[in-house]
Amino acid sequence: MEKKFAKIPVKELNENVFHLIDDDWMLITAGDPGNFNTMTASWGGLGILWHLPVAFCFVRPHRYTFAFMEASDHYTLCFLEDQYRDILQFCGTRSGKDVDKVAETGLVPLTTETGNIYYQQCKMVLECRKLYADWLTEDNFAVQNLVGKNYPKKDFHKFYIGEIISCLKAV
Ligand SMILES: Cc1cc2nc3c(=O)[nH]c(=O)nc-3n(C[C@H](O)[C@H](O)[C@H](O)COP(=O)(O)O)c2cc1C
Image 1 (cartoon, rainbow, N blue to C red):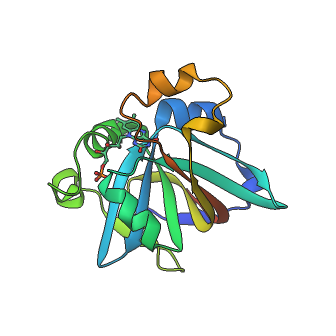
Image 2 (image 1 turned 135 degrees about the vertical axis):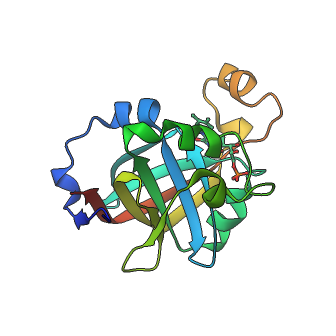
């Protein structure tokens, strides 16, 4: 039976964000139903900016997902049910350049009212409208040893701040 999702106000979210992102991980998905890509991410956050509920995430330039993030006005952050850890592992170690992640993992794509992709396997989905994006730059690090630790190849992330336009929860 197909799982149902309900739209809830973001202020009704009761998950611990640190646990959700750092421990559970998420899928960042961008593109349209005919052509999209997804990758695992565990760096990011949720908050309030410009009086809006926002989510921010970080994508390195050589990810296949990067071009989709650049080309898209919207993207989703998908949090999967606990039993799908293997899917997150796969999408975090294999590239859409080489494999069809949906075919390989059994992810079942669904489409939001706005036309963005999420999956049957989700427990929670944050649908985002891209508001702002920019590169992290070496000069702007106040603590320089973060650069050596995290960017030995100097492949700095681009960060994306998105307005959370809808929050879907599996019911
Ligand atoms: C737990 C975990 C967290 C990750 N977090 C990020 C992240 O926040 N940003 C990023 O650019 N890559 C991150 N990655 C790496 C990408 O998911 C990985 O390189 C993926 O294969 C990229 O897929 P793509 O080439 O299809 O976009 C993470 C990987 C794992 C396993």
